[in-house]
Length: 482
Image (cartoon, rainbow, N blue to C red; front, top):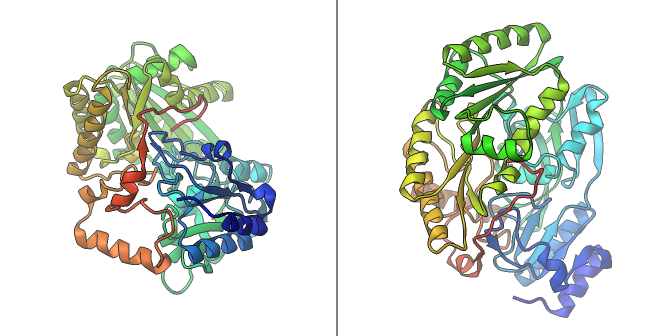
């Protein structure tokens, strides 16, 4: 659809000339999120600076039945922040104020465009931080984190975004501004904060969030353990948890990923190892010293080829640099890849890895692994070359089989990235018709006109499917991690 000149003039009246992007070249910047496999061009992009402006823009779109697509920093990897039906995209990148830091109550109130890492940097000097550390922590926004209920390596111990959101200010698809939750943890009535976090812009748009702050730990210790096979590493993960230790992070990388990282980043991972575990402990110094000793013993008993405790902060930072730049480094091995974040119960990790590798062999593809092993949250990257006939199709088929395998093992189609347009149809693997119909009715309560982020999260959106362009090209900039 195209927007009439009068509509664009009304948008400009609300957010000012600098707050409207309507040229073709300008809108191309917003054609996709980081899942560049899916593209859809918005008819206009608005950059509000206040909740009132967001409310007015949504009201204008409701009046004329124009789709609304919320967008934070655009770092999602599910095709959630793109416009398959055109319409108006609301980007919160100019709503970047930290409105309040309330240390006695260990919380902060922020606008949705505040960058995740910036919040931690703002309170670090006073001994606090914001625990959720999703993939692109250095560029992703708090509003986007709330929208997708983002996770991250340290969510093994501290939980995902919803566990750290106390309240929200929210503009619904009905054109109302509501405030749910608050600084007091227990509030009467339905837990609407829990409903809105992870709703992926299908119910409305976050305009402010009250988030929990945590004390910085007294000490941090990072351990690298290398194994001959990824199955050995996966079984060690279960052994560590079974010993009663919950690390802050427990990450796993396989041989192709190690090779790519060492060729590009040179993080010091053992070349030739079949898999590496990165295990991070934090907390009281005496406690983590004892836990580290126990973990080293477990790894050695599980035939680890090498176990190394980072000697200082510089070595620890280098080990994490390798992990953080894994996806970018994989560009040395492949032209393109499809990324998934399916989940299996942690005890099923070895079985899941064997099944995924069998899928790769069957389709004659390389599937590299870097994942949050402690959560059972897999991040297989299915490598392909779109220039080779049939390879993209085989990658898509492998992707579908992979998701079905994880569901069969008792898992989920997503652990932290969300659903977006990428996995909307795959929800049928996980939920029955009655479940999906109930979610659809809930969606209509908040968005009776069906204008909010159409085609995302829930299946059955044929009109959307017709409009989405699959490019078959995926790339992640160096320095961005998953």
